[in-house]
Length: 205
Image (cartoon, rainbow, N blue to C red; front, side, top):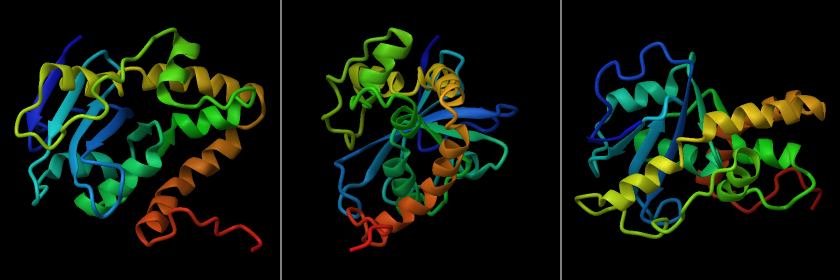
């Protein structure tokens, strides 16, 4: 189990043969169009995390872009809506197919309103994540060991969460609904980029 830092892009062939990867990103803020994408972290569920410090503003990362668009690899997120929009905006790719543990949690864990990654991870797999580095300078030319560990922690457990959440979705008869929501997620991200972030397009009014 190790955390690996890559500058600019993923190494060639790093995730060859995998069928799913957990992905998260770090930015300079949470506003689309204002705050740049700085870091992308990925894990194949093997205990290792690969953290890519992106080259801005060109974002020349063909291997990462290829992985994000590979139809044979499911990309696991927690609140993928934001990450997918960031990838669309800065990398120019539509990420697909996707799975979002936050959506899965909201559909399966209706007994609670706590669907943040820290809460879901603690309840379902007994891991207490630290969020101490969540608000730090991700645009820095170097990442601290603490930042690297934080970035890694956000992807190391998503595969295990998916297993637990899938079992709950099946038990509650909501798996097909979840799959439909996941398939819609890239389109929801495009709506965000087009200016409909807080608008419910399905509402009557």
